[in-house]
Image (cartoon, rainbow, N blue to C red; front, side, top):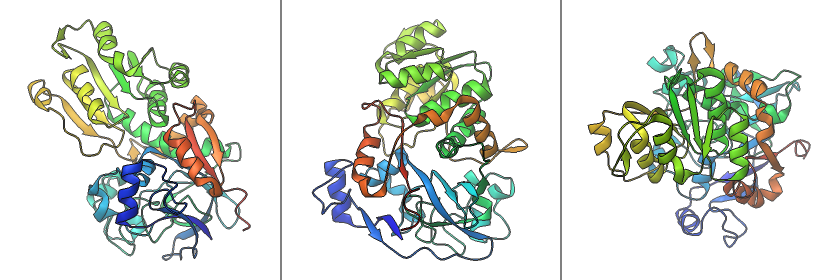
Length: 386
């Protein structure tokens, strides 16, 4: 099969980190990524299915991995070589379309009894992501045994598979995974009836805006967006106020009648949902959230240096929001299907590329906002008979 293979190569990894996301000088590779002919992954055991991707998204964590900027924290919980791609809509061998829930938790790993998180339906808190009968890998797309979406075939456990109704397009279905991440953050933020700031309006930020508007109904929803298309889409998805990133503190001060104290505010919003995860965004989070408020890190952070004095003095709650699980009586993915339909999130899929043009695809995804795009994805629908 054809696949984009990520190999552990320190020289190529270092070169990618220096050169940025796209490194055409590395023998036609993008950093440690290369298009290759490889064997299809074997089914690991009962309950596993072969999935042939139709569309597979490119997300921020993929870009951080490819350009060498992901945290070394992940090294013990991934296995090489792996095929990236965890935002996937594909087909089973019987032709049924499915969406992949990529976390490789206890059920997929054949672990009994389930760990505490999985027993509670919280696969986002699985304690066994490097154990069981699979190689380490927190998700499909980071595990050598399963393959990933940037290929013509992967394998998935029945616990990871969600049927796609005939009425749902591939473009809508590929948005379910990022929408599920956003739903998880929105419902866990305690944002009902509060003032909320969403930092960042990339795909994940826009999904967060939609999820907050649809499920959390804050009293006021502010968003920072760098580019015109992002600002327009944030407004369409439910933002009350949209400003440029540099205007966040001023906008929050006006919206909450706070006073300025140095570079921070005396009060601030109740909740910040940070969809950037940078050193600068974390500093903004702590400056604009009220004392006793909550900062939710939805965008994947790396190693940063931030003054945590305001976290201590203002008694701010800082929490991460990873993946998905069960929200009350419903699984996050079920809620995400509803959100994609209600908010029309398929319109965020701006452009698709075949595997052959992977360098163009990754460059486009890395510069999506500047180029007026949102979600960039690989289109594998013409690849399945190769």
